[in-house]
Amino acid sequence: MRSTLVLPIDPVTPDPAVIEEAAAVLRRGGLVAFPTETVYGLGANALDAGTVQRIFAAKGRPASDPLIVHLADCEGLPQVVAEAPQVAYTLAAHFWPGPLTLVLPRHPQVPLAVTAGGPTVAVRVPAHPVALALIRATGFPIAAPSANRFGHLSPTQAAHVLDDLEGRVDVILDGGPTPVGVESTVLSLVTPVPTILRPGGVSREALMAVLGEVQVAERLFSPEAPLPSPGVLTKHYAPRARLTLYCGPREAVLHAMREAAVQEIGRGQRVGLLLAEEDLPAFTGLQVVFQTVGMGVRLDEVARQLFTALRALDHANVTVILARDFGATGLGLAIRDRLTRAAAGSVINVK
Ligand code: TXA
Ligand code: MG
Picture 1 (cartoon, rainbow, N blue to C red):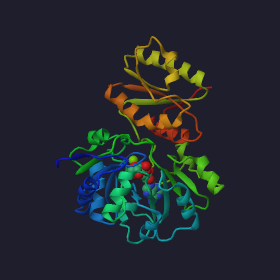
Picture 2: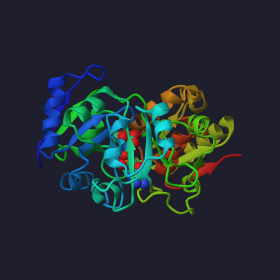
Picture 3: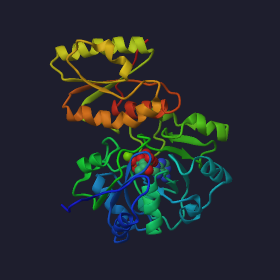
Picture 4: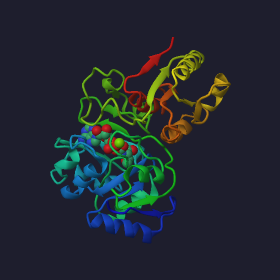
């Protein structure tokens, strides 16, 4: 085991000396975890195949799951993408820096380790001063998956990274909690119609306003459909406890959740509930662990707190988690996607 150095850094005006220390580690072929606006990334030099391999080893991630390449601005695109259609630049102008990842044809200088041997590469410009300063300081694009062990919840705080990767990453830049809280939207531009492979921080509605037509990979909500991309597994973003997601009209959902909680408690389970603040009165008198994620209508709050809440339930050693759905509008789609995958198919549609 190597030791992991945690360096605190101001998320708004990062200290150039701290950035330089982390950049030097990356230049030497090391791994640096850093905050982006979505979640913390586990970064390495994207153009160095050997170093990229270390990301997979640190995460315990299969080589079949491709990585996102992070750029400081869209001028960096020709370095990593063979050809970018005009629509890529239009999207970049609207959403970069920001939580949108574009899947485009791979440039030959991008190691195949990054793209999992595939002909396309995923790229984005993150909207976080620390991430941008780090990329600029190194002068090379940074390949970074979320900085968690494979299949675990993505980290939205430096402490989450340490929990998962202590001794496996050289430096963690601790810039505090990440503002968006769910990962970027992954949009393929190599399909006939632009296709959302993973809903995330940029909503489907926002993409439609710019593109007109956008598809959502069918697989997202029907487990039988083919995989949209190699790394998109059904069970992912998962806490240790068995999670069930409840979808449907709110009153009916809360009623069904209360009944299920009573039953599980009766079976000797330790039950955790993932709820909005306003849902609490529906569960008075129950011996359960509550985690709230803000008001249900504030989807930005829900997204920001989602992974921290699920990690907290794990730390509370619950054996069963019952979670409510937050709809499919705006950030709701990304929230539903993460909860659906955490549930690994255990989704109940309440009428
Ligand atoms: O917000 C984010 O996207 C964070 C921050 C660190 O940027 N990164 C992140 O990376 O979530 P990761 O590796 O955990 O998820 C990347 C997703 C995976 O589902 C992967 O399969 C998909 O993007 N992906 C990467 N390259 C791809 C490609 N060439 N074609 C299709 N999907 C790709
Ligand atoms: Mg991930």
